[in-house]
Length: 135
Image (cartoon, rainbow, N blue to C red; front, side, top):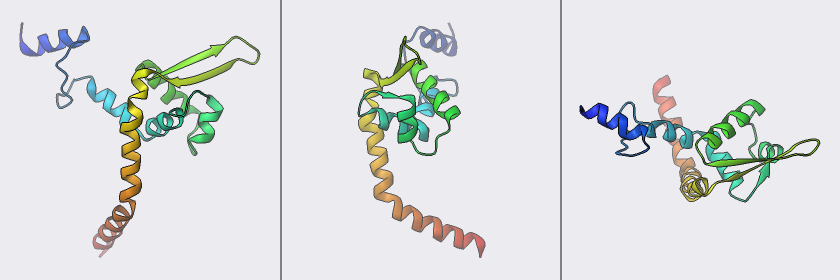
C-alpha cells in the first residue's frame, strides 16, 4: 500500500500519525477550531462551569446568535462541549466542557494572558508599521 493511502486508512480508523503540516491532515481542522477567537472566548466562559446559551452570549460580548450557535455546534461535534436539553417548556439547554474540552482551558488561558501581556508591544509595532507604510 502506498504511503499516502496507508496514512489515509490509518487516519480514517482514528490512528496517527497526525501531522498538521500535511495538507489533508484532519488536525488542521482541529487547529482551525481551537485557534478561532470565538472558541477561545467560549471555552473561557465555560471554564467556570455549565452555562445556558444566553449566559454564554452575555459573557462573550459581540458574538452574534448565529456565530455562537455555529461555534457551539462545532465544539460539540469535536467532542469539546456537551449540550444537555431538559424537557420542559420552554426547553432548557445547557452547555459544558467535556473532559477533552477542559484540557484546553489552561492552553487557551495562556494565549489570552500572552495577548494581554504583549498588547502594548503589538500596538506600538502596528503604529510603527502603519506609519512606515503610509510614508
